[in-house]
Length: 382
Image (cartoon, rainbow, N blue to C red; front, side, top):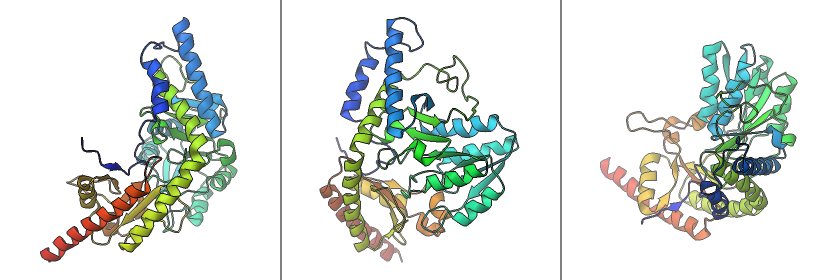
């Protein structure tokens, strides 16, 4: 079977073999419902308790602060909509580079009488402190800024932003989905009220995540029912996935420094090659995740190039949220002031634990070949 080299770890990661092995019993003989009182149920509850402790330990949180969800999108929705439901309508402020599940959740609150504010970023994708301070002067009740951007990899100074927002009386949330396993994520040190993580970005299973939330923050549930997860997320727990998530967190934290060092070496080699080909690397002067490169070539369409690279044996991502009928450039790049034409050319490469220097070298070679082909076709057409 044709299997391109995988350069899209920010989208999802392969399931770690150790995680898979830990999950298998809970897909077979250990199938109990954690709400049942018999032995099967008690064993399931114990497994969930262990996983909750593992997730909490990786984040320097308390197990009782971990609410399991179906993933990062649900966790982000739970905080924004759940917190808003317990407050009188006010202002909600999010950064201009948030994942759609944060941005659209915040926009949804406008229908309930809330005022939506978007906080700008500079040309590197870092929060514009002048705009941030101005937005805080309006005293928003809810603020959300992501720790690591999923496209550029840019890291924000969340501890400082959270301190400023909380001093104004805001409840501060950060989407840390891309950061976990790549940088230290300390719920206490960050000083946030709530934080979102997801398993499938750290070599865990798809379909499980968590909202880590200070118990002093009141939330209304999105899903009512039997009262699981402190009454904030009813429904029978996804036992096998939760078990996998717990171990994935433990492994990610134990391997974090080695993984980051490996990824940084790969990124340095990649971006040296990109520079020789004339690429523009976005956010090159900002502090970024060690394994993420977001770049474009002037006059080259990103979707077209990604398709050609896939056929050449390399799976990476376009920075555009595109459909053939209505192509849209990256909202993150537009917020950074990148011209739409350049933003439409954006390509993201995100390396992982198993990526090799040889794969990076071969990718640069394939990229050079495809660029020459595309530019030759453009020259012929003109």
